[in-house]
Length: 247
Image 1 (cartoon, rainbow, N blue to C red):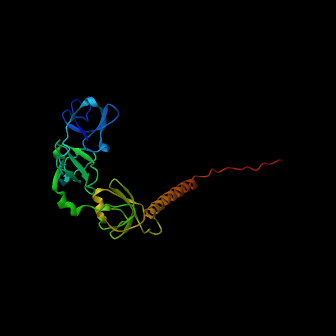
Image 2: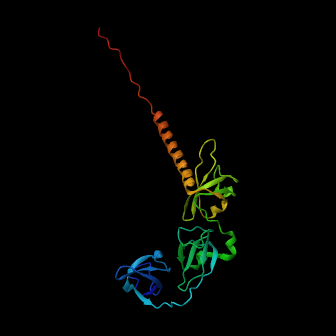
Image 3: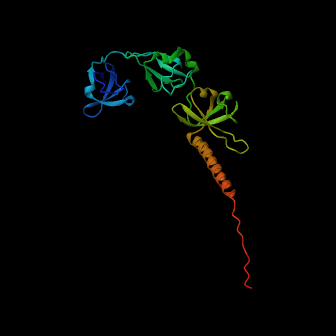
């Protein structure tokens, strides 16, 4: 694996002169630069004359960075909000520390920063592991255990729902039982809101898709009924008919 020190940032705001990056060949005379040892995490391609290759000790054991549960105190970007909790690592040799979702500490990092004032460490990640949220999959049957977090009508404590979507740590759940033959709309849960539910069973992915499609059909039907209602309300222009006399 190649590593190179930036000797000329070429006016780029992403490169810092003197910093060492992981380099991945891109064409004949360029590299994709990354702060992580993975090609997919690169932040751009740059000409090879921006870097000076450095020797990497192949037999040096990889250092395992400690992880911590941390709270946002000064958001490093608009993505974060004050008091949200994430998993962060201790700084690497280059000064950067990685940030992970609290419920996916072993997944890919969502950011890397140098500013230490952005997060406040709470406790070592190993000590907080017992509080880590469950990873939910499409088809899981869940039960509402803290409706005060969801704050949605018809999603009270004890109600069961199905996970119908899962993307980047956010899930959508759909209540299993209708109310007065009416299908209840789905709810999106993000981050700390996942603590409002617990897994109690599972469906097949096909069954979960059918639940989602049922909701979409209900929405389409409601739209059509609304359009028909608006059409019926259109006033009819009254026409006058006069009787013609031939005499």
